[in-house]
Image: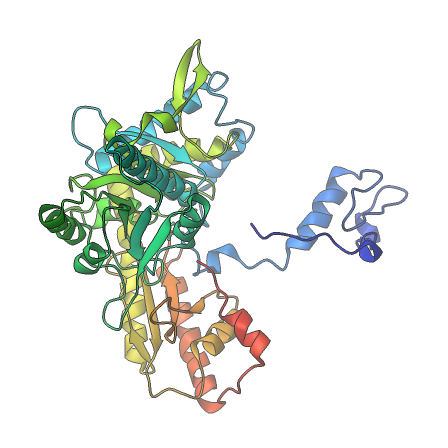
Length: 467
Ligand SMILES: Cc1ncc(COP(=O)(O)O)c(C=O)c1O
């Protein structure tokens, strides 16, 4: 979360302007940065807070996020009913714990965990926490192996593409692991097997493969990476496990690409994470991480909490957490079933392919991806378009309410600026066609009114989109 700084003393008491029509109390003073001396009636508080939020974007028009922005009323009702439940209180809410257990089992079979009940997993606040847990397990395993062999365990590294989500940079910084980024180059926009294996050595705790890349929605070839690591092992002896960051793809590939081998079918895959709140179709606040077997999850990372007179193993960075999202995840599994999930993801993909196909035909754009892996695609301006940028286009689309991010790629393609569109459940074909109309109109405007360069500080802000 943004790190907020303390507001200057002189503006501490600057009060909110409250419309007198809202106020039933005799007086109503609400300082902005201090706790008010007295409360107000619930309706006044509701109106004041709602007014503050008017300027937030419309979540349904947010094509930047991977995170769920629409759930059906029954799911919302269930979440409201479960709002008071704390996920950590296993004793008090044993049935919520049971729903979490069922979800882990459903995912372990979707991700082809080996038969025999050896896989283990848990819910998290999202993929960032799940990746942190997956990374810790890799680190602990590597350290235990090195220490047992009497070898130096001071310089761990993790190999991944420079296109990884920022959570992996965080993991490396917080746990003092050297990040070994494989740069992107024209024509290779994500990690491939040979480049991954070339950066591994005896200090490599693992390789992260992404399903799919936050930058352009493409899947990294897990099986190819695994084969390259098999060769590395036979030639140099380093046995390097893979963690699959399936933040989005963990809930897409099982339904749209069932024959693609990216999960526990690949023996080198030790662990997988996914965001329940992305293509798992739940509102923000739930992720999942699973390990293939007990070897992949060192026991000394596991804490045991009291549970119905016994003890329950847990692995988490935080303690209290809302239970509603887990109930909603289970609701989705029951409500949609395999066929329902397939239908939802297929509809998203059809719309993504329709959009990318039409955008390719417009003329000024070149597609980097079409949306054939995740229902996500990225495109850039053709090299001969110089009178406006993707940032200009993104800003103009915002005038109609569309939130379509423009951003630059990571190393070594930092000069490449693109627009990315994430198609999610709730973004209909009608909305897609309206977006296409607006895109055509804004291109016309920009072609007739070439843009001037904004001042450097505005340029900097435009490029600061974070995934
Ligand atoms: C590949 C990948 N990994 C991890 C994350 C972090 O996910 P979360 O927002 O669930 O913490 C994202 C988010 O977009 C992602 O795309």
